[in-house]
Image 1 (cartoon, rainbow, N blue to C red):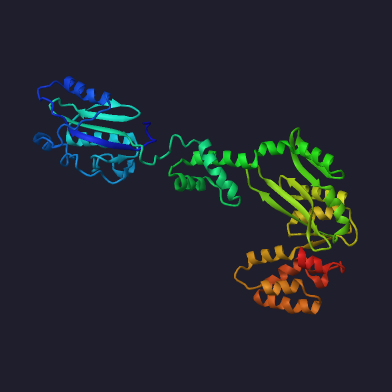
Image 2: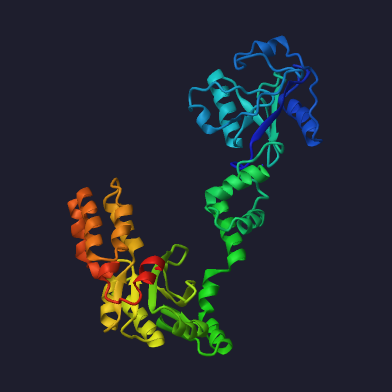
Length: 429
């Protein structure tokens, strides 16, 4: 047994019929003879009178017919250093070997008697009374029928193998170290430490999804393969230095060809990557004549700022061009607007009504504005727009001011400048 890993289970407390005249060394040899053969023989299960009356025993020594104590594992927090009342009897369990030693040594200290350790190793802890006339002894061993605090064989690799199938079958399930700990406890009845759960989780996810470093290192080879197998595909990147890229842009040949047959509206949005390496994944998509979403381009950037968005729009324009009826739709992120204004000259920049409504809900959480707002955005005439805008104004005068500040022509159908596509703009993007 290793301190701090396995519970200690007291399996024997007994008294031997040893002649009182025996020397201490003879008594120790007598005990060791049984211990060396891994045999513990309870010669007299009824404690002798002098043993019962010794001051250091708070209660009668247990007999063989005594029932084993409940599976309550005693920890360091179970007692204070100088005031203890821990039952030391057959079946008592201690979280660590050091906890048992502290309990028995404090008992000896408070009761004015001395102990001698006969054996203390990985599998057992055996002690006897120093008085050669006292036949009392105690043996504790590592318990194998109790769930350990951190099972030695439950290595991080084994934890990963146990949880790999769970992650495969539940791709969207939470996969924090706490979830791994609970999974191992429920399905394998084994406790594992947080660090081991974290390492096992990393090994399992790397096995399923691949190693992030390897994935990023394959970008150049991936780009070459795309261009070779999909002629007309466009990829480019901007690097910090050799082997480290800052931005990466990709547009497949099929998407470039499909753009000629789609509605001239491009919706752009970004999502934060929250894994080991942070960043943002930006996508651009449109709608075809069958009202189906068509992905156009993808970009990986380090941060959403004016520089990254302008770099994205320059490459987007280089691939998909610009014309009078073209509209770029996004949320109200200021860097998107700044990047758009730097790159595009005649295309229109619209705001996504869905994202605009989300921002309103953050500022006016308790107000029922959703129905009136949607009718404002879809209004066909200025008169209809004004009717529903006044409903929003009645909820909060500042709400109208906030919406007017972003520009009616950017989110309201009645004021949209590109008259040929307002239906698609409001209903699909």
